[in-house]
Length: 174
Image 1 (cartoon, rainbow, N blue to C red):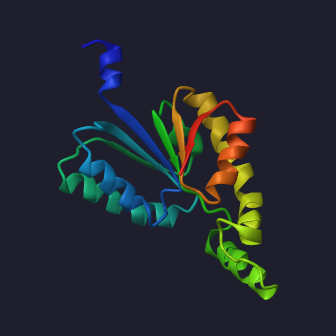
Image 2: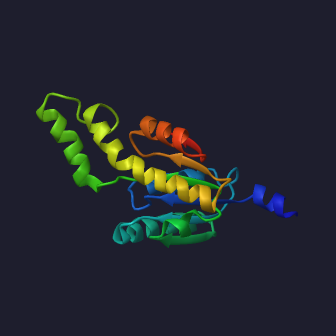
């Protein structure tokens, strides 16, 4: 099998913000599609080491319980996670839950929409999240230029527009 055939039949997945409680759902999706998506490497990255270890260890147990024996790395370093990835999944929450509470409560004081996808709450979240997503996109461009960046971070539409207009990264916003 040629190097290209091997690459076409295997994937490195990087999950940025992997300390999120949504990570097990992502892993479950890969488990359910293991025949169609032969992932050979998962690199989970988060800046919160404690959450990364808790969620990452659960993800590893899920993979093992389903007979998926692949490379599995947990790291706090973005470059380590992204390097040579085929797909980079981003689900970051800049400011963590404290910021989300403010995004929701401050607008409500003024009878405005208070949530992370629209209105002033979404705008506040966008102001925090876009610079971080730009850094992630730059890392993808530098260390995995052929990778697709799949963004799950809200407000997804605003982030997608910022990345598409200001980077060369291949991306999808969900």
